[in-house]
Length: 528
Image (cartoon, rainbow, N blue to C red; front, side, top):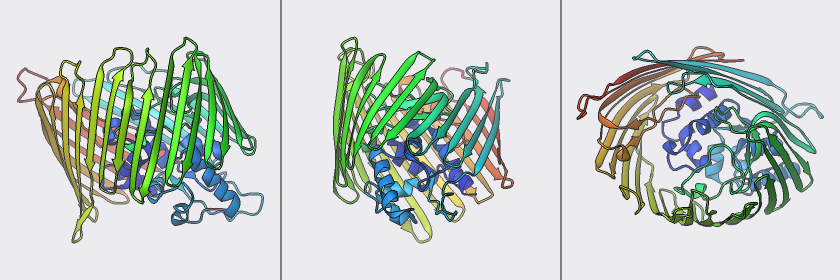
C-alpha cells in the first residue's frame, strides 16, 4: 500500500517528486531521463533496508555518498540498528532533508530474529506489462520483471518497443548477488559503472548542467545492476572489501571495456584510482559535517587530460554554498569553466560560465528557484517560481530566457495544480495547464487540460506528464494547440494494480496543417 501511495504522489506536494529531486540533484523532473526515473521507481517498489544492506548494496542504490555509507556502517557497528528516522538524522552526514527524502526509497528494519539469523531473506517479485496505441494505428508495449531476495540478491529482466522503434530490441538482463565480509557484490549481465566524478568512467544517466548544488558533485557508486533499456555495459563485475580498502573489477563485452578501481577510505576521506583501456584517473574527497572538498584528475593514453575540483560549505542549518572548477580535454564536448551556487530554505540560485574546449564556444547560464511553503486554513498552498537564462553567443538564437510559475494546493484527498511556462529564444512561446485530481489508498484519478503556442523548435517547452510507473512521458510542446489527458490508477488488491492514461493533442490554430494525435496507455502490475 505504501508503494502505491509513493507512485500516486509523484506530482503532488512533497512526496516522491521532491525526494527524487533532492537525491538526484536535478532542479526539475524534466532534467531527468526515463531510465533514471525508472531506477527511483524501482527503489520505491523495493526499498533498501538501511539496517541490513551491506556497503556494496548501499552504494549501488545511488541514494548515499561514499562518505554517508561509511558513516552509516560505522554507526551500525558501534550502536546497532537505527531505530527511527529521527535517529538517522543524528548520524554524521545525514541532514533532515536527506532523511526525509530517503523515507521514500528506504526502510529501517528493526530485527527481532534469533542470533545468527539477522538478515532478511524475504523473496519478492514484480511483473509489469504495458501497452499503448495511437489513432494512426501504431502500437508499443513492453514488460519488466524484478525479483529481490532481501538485501542479498536482485534480478532484472525487461524488454520493449516504442512508437519510433517498433521492432523489439534485445531485452535487458541483470543479476546481482550482495555478499558479506570480503565479497561486496557480483553482477552478471547489464550493469552500470560509476567511478569518481565521471571524468573517465560513468555509464548511465548523469546531469549535464549545474542547476543545483546537488549536481556539482557526482557520487561514484561503483558497479550496480540495472534494468535500464539503454544500458551500455554487459558482462561481469565484482567488488571486494578488505578493511579500509575496496577493489572493483569488471569487463563488458559490449564495447570491450575493462574497468579496475582501487579505493582507500578513512573516517572522513576517500581516495580512489580508476583505470580502463582508455586511461586512468585519481579522485579524492574530504567530508566534514559543515564542509566538504572533492577533486579528480584524469589522463587518457592519447594524452588528453581533464580535471575538476569543488567545495561545499554549510554556514548554518538549511543554507549551503558551493563552487566547482572544471577543465575537460580538447576532444570533450562538455563545457569547461566555473560554477557557483547558494541554496536556502526557500531560495536557490546558481551561475555557470564556461566554454567548449573542442570549439571554444562560450556559454553563460543562471538559474533562480523560489519555492516557499505556505498554509491557509486547512488548504496547503505550495508556490514555485523558476527563472533560467542561457547565453551562447555562437548559436543562431544566442539567448534563451525561461520562466515558470506553478501553484499546487490540496485538501484531504483532493489536489489542484496549475502551471505556466514562458520562453523567449527565437521568438516568444508559452504553455499553460490546469490539473485537478483525487487520490486515496486504493485509487486515484487526475484530469489535465492545457493550451500552448510555440512557433519555433528552438522555443520548445518540455512538460512532465503524469504516467504509470516505469513509463516516463515528457513531451516537447511545439505548435499552436491544446492538450487534455485523464490518468487513473487502481490498487485492485494486494497483488494486482492497474494504470490507465488517455491523452489527446490537437493543433487547430497552427499556421500550417499539423495532424493531432490521441494515445491510450494501459499498464498492469502483479506483485508476489
